[in-house]
Length: 471
Image 1 (cartoon, rainbow, N blue to C red):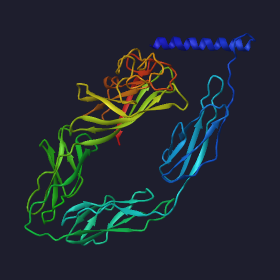
Image 2 (tube, helix red, strand yellow):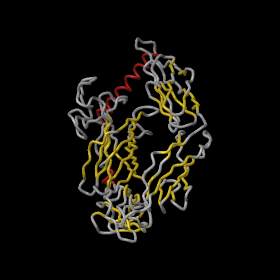
Image 3 (cartoon, helix red, strand yellow):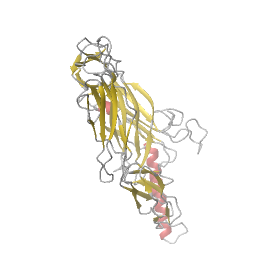
Image 4 (cartoon, one colour):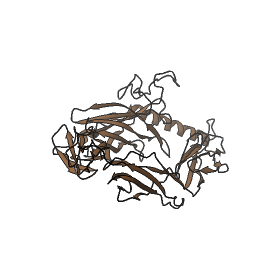
């Protein structure tokens, strides 16, 4: 395939030279055209906070333009329609591009600024009040109309209850009406919000004292290393009428444990945490609760994989994405991200890969996980992935081919996850397992997909690195 592509490029270059020479020498051949063009925006629309608006730009050539956001933290824009969606206060900057064609040269990029219209007044709204039992715990939650996070929670009745200032975790100390306040101090765009209060009635205990109920809302993530876990939880809904004195996190299956006075509790795993879940036991003066439901060890990660492309330097194909590793069940879920199209641009196109459709063990304690742009594993002519008919897109040679199962233009990437220690650097044998196939529209190879494998690829591309970090 690489030889086929090289011959294609060589032929194209020779044809261009012949056309150039015949055009300049007064022969009958056509001369190469490069007519200048420019882009002009229409009047900027009004963009309200958390609202939408549509920008309009036209090219003097009459060719269609594409839009992109230069301030993605403030706004996003539909590449084709120019519809803008606002996320935050600030200045939304939209760019318009037109890459040209056989007659017109690429247009200089044009930009338009939209200042987000913000009402500086903000208010706070409480979620419905949770039940709070004597000596028990509950989570309160308030939201701000500005979208800013609530800055702090505080107890107005500290003799009756306490509250964690950022998480909103309330602990009852005795019976009575527990009153919690929420505050948001504003920022450069918003005024401080008026303080709001929420009252949680706590009834006196009636009946005999008992052991506490089981803790709830248990969640576990890997700690700083693969041999530790951080377990978070809520205290029991019922304290048994006696204050909870502590918590014990136990591994499932049994083997090790750790204790603490409150959430979270850090647990050391003597031989690594892979394969274990975690449950929590609450204690009071009467005794121990039954264990909570066991929680899987679920941790979010970011991943970047790079494929060297000898024919498109300095552009390489790069996948940037994220996933969740379930260390208890040794599975990966939610792999998604963006794959560059290194033969396009500038700027290079990106292909969203949002469907994790394949995952398999490599026999060495690792997982090969693949994500696709379409909801099918059909990528190449002949069907699936990674094998196929020399990298030709699925449905070839019919163009277009809307009737083919899965459609035309699918792309995918396969990453490697060390399920025992996902942060460990990969050796070369594991780097060699990384692959991609990019058959998305907008490339420069016609019916041929860009691919990257060790030892073979439509352009000679091959994987060079993968890094995994915590989200």
